[in-house]
Structure formats: structure tokens, C-alpha cells
Amino acid sequence: MSLGLQFQPQALRFAPEYIAPMTQTQQIAKHLRDVYFGGNWTTVNYRTQLTDVNWQQATEQVHGFNSIATLVHHTHYYIAVQRGVLLGGPLVGKDSESFEHPPISSESDWQDMLENVWKDVEEFAQLIEQMPDDKLMEPFTDIKYGNYFRNMHGMIEHLHYHLGQIVLIKKMILDYGHNK
Image 1 (cartoon, rainbow, N blue to C red):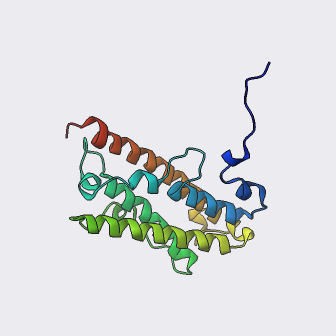
Image 2 (cartoon, rainbow, N blue to C red):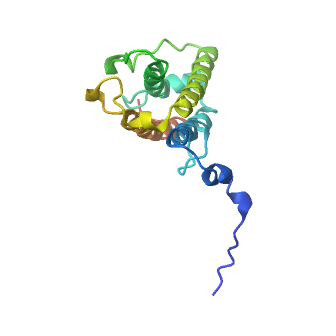
């Protein structure tokens, strides 16, 4: 019994990346890029989800949830913290500061925020790719913070978690209206 399905190699948009041998750090960098720029299994990413969100929508408060802009800043905050460590700096970050962002009062402010995020994510991905795989099991600045592998994967999981929130908040704003 045939279902009429045929293998179509053009459907494997990212096939060379899955076929070509990659180091663990290259794979982690790819996973980071995928959640921001596309290509992950969920087919949802930050750039696509934020493309049609304007500054008023990004800063709109819905049902007491964090705004889209606040969630974007929050996730970017941890990218910047880990990027700083990979650049040789100390681990500097406080959870309490991760939700505090500069005011966004124009489309230009919002677009500047997004461009800074995209730039920092790509720079961070490049730094991850340059790391040797054996560094992944070393302590992330201090043993109490776990190792590099745990921190990077944990952050990517955190990104997916907040991306899901962004998708739902965006849907409430764009599709259904909401009660503040």
C-alpha cells in the first residue's frame, strides 16, 4: 500500500548542516542561531515572531504579564552575560536586573533594541563555535554555576520558554484583543 509520499531532498533546507560533521560547540552555536533566526524543529524563532511587532505592541502590558519588549530584553540580558564570560570577563549579572530595560518610546528605540539583540546573538554564536569542545565540561567561572555545557544549554532552553510566552502574548495582542 503506497501513501503517495516521495522523498524530496529540497524539503531538507538545512541538510548540509546535519550531514557535515560538527563539533559540539558548533552544534550549540547552531542551536542558538536556530532559536533566534530559524531552522529549529519547532519552526518558531525570535526574528520571525518579532518582525511584525511594532513598538507599541512590544511594550503593551497584557493581563499583568511581562511585555514582549521586556521578555526580549530579559533573554538578551543572559546572552550578554554569557558572552562577557566567553570574552574573558567575569560572570556579572543579576536576575533582578534582567527585566529592567531602557524605555522604548518609538519604533526607532524598538528596532535599535532588536538590531542589538541580533548582533550580540551572532557574536555570541561565533564565540561558542571558537571554543574547543573540552571547555564545555569546565566550570563556568565557578563550580557552583555548573559547567559551560549546562549554562549554554540551559540558556537555550530558557530562550525557547520565553519565545513561547512571546508567541502567546503576541497572539493576544494581534488576534484576539485582550483585557488589561
